[in-house]
Length: 169
Image (cartoon, rainbow, N blue to C red):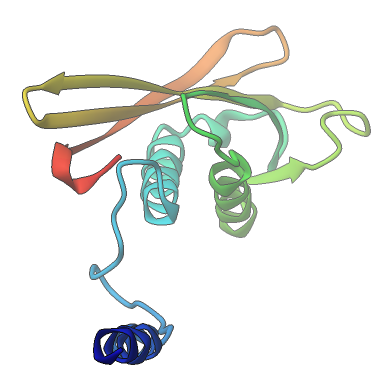
């Protein structure tokens, strides 16, 4: 009987002890953010910033027939093994280009304008393992093409993540 009571008391106390150890939700600033083996929000932000910098530095938008250039964001294909919302990448790029004054982005997909450029691309992943180590590499590929379909700017950025098997993927 004493064992049954002890088990009952422990059964009631264990959930309370676990709740007491949990941390309250909080905003994470700086570089102390949760990193996963998948693509996370800071990955999208970093690669979007790098791509924007590359595109602006190329001066392609400065050579457009109109100022600011009219740009349509086409399809960004998710060719990874994970479910991704590619709008996390394209929206950040669109906002930055609109703010720069170098381009206006057509959100209708070209239905209402005759765009100077179309931005398209894909995100792909590769996976490797060696012993207990696992690695995922995510490659962001973007192309800017003119109305004739010729690529006038392209770039590729990669994120590689590694972990020991015990981390859990």
